[in-house]
Length: 79
Image 1 (cartoon, rainbow, N blue to C red):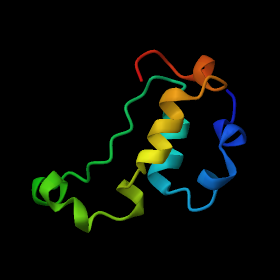
Image 2 (cartoon, one colour; image 1 turned 90 degrees about the vertical axis):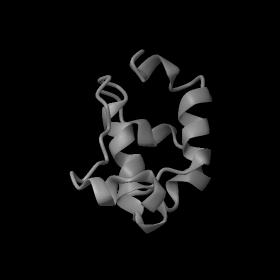
Image 3 (cartoon, rainbow, N blue to C red; image 1 turned 180 degrees about the vertical axis):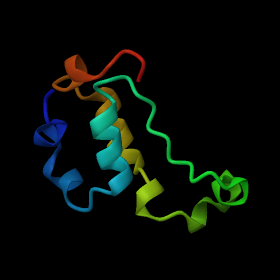
């Protein structure tokens, strides 16, 4: 398996969240990166402002992972 961090633009490497790291680990295998904690009150998206970096993915990161042609061969089709 390829380490997708090697392809990250420098600006995304700074401040990479645990959630983004989890996505990098799971996208190659087609595994869903589940960030729920199992408590419906805490998992409620209306409470997202209380979520920490373990559940935060920047839009810039998502844009990169969905559009970068260099990494697309390593992203599982399920993603």
